[in-house]
Length: 373
Image 1 (cartoon, rainbow, N blue to C red):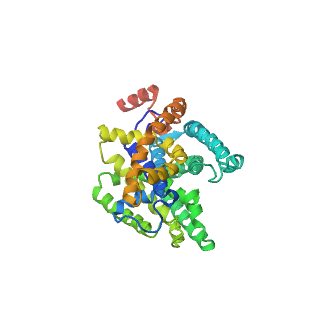
Image 2 (cartoon, rainbow, N blue to C red; image 1 turned 60 degrees about the vertical axis):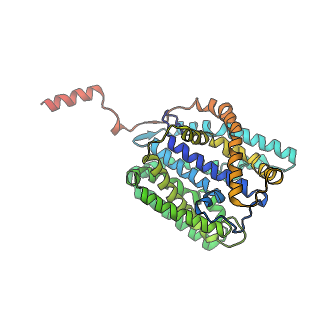
Image 3 (cartoon, helix red, strand yellow; image 1 turned 180 degrees about the horizontal axis):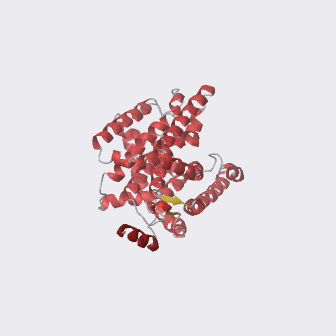
């Protein structure tokens, strides 16, 4: 993950790779009910992070909060430049994807109402091809100056917002059973994850090197997701687990915040082949995320019908991983031709805060005179 400042964080790219792998597996194995959401999940708990791979979106959200807290630490945010950079980062590929989705709808007669989706897509999760999450990200970007201002004064203020969001979801759930939509697709549920990502950065020194604590948290979270998996998923109609949407995004935010801070600070990341491959997948993750929805469902059906029967989750996950690797050249081409030319145009969007800036030469001379006196 290379920022506009030129800093590169390989560990964060590893985690981006994991997040996009989760999402790819979720779409691949549950395509056309190939692996049904009926509770017939593998008993090896960590696999539930892939069979319930929608949770990868939560990891992306936490990564955003963590990264921007890191990049702006001790800096003053130039919000206009920041928003311009995010437009350069997100809009070019998003434009291509929306145009491709429109052409696809003309061919398949899907009746995709692009004007309507674009009109509401910056307010609600209506953008096609999984781009709804970009709407949530943009809402976070608009709130970022306020979040940074609060964080500079009191970390507790961010925790209070997390608790307030949790309380809001309790109230909404008491009024309607349809809390899942708001929790998954909007800031009603996602604000927790951005803020917990920010807090994870600020509390990283308390997390660094705490391997036993992370293993304990991972065991708990994987066990929890395995339980959800064996109920058929929060997206399944098999069981009523709507109340889980009140608190699940907060739990995801806590665990992924802990994971990001632990992984980022506790290791000297290798530059070996496996590490560089994972970092490459992370670097291409935006292209993978937006483009894979054009092919992943048909790809899964083709493999199931003509290559091998994906009649169990572990086999389907293996096939999903192979298909993701085969999709990488497409993502690489997208990254180089669509993303990179605009990424090169980004500008710095932070300056040192006045109290942290280097003293001017005249100030240093005056300080030396006063010390000598």
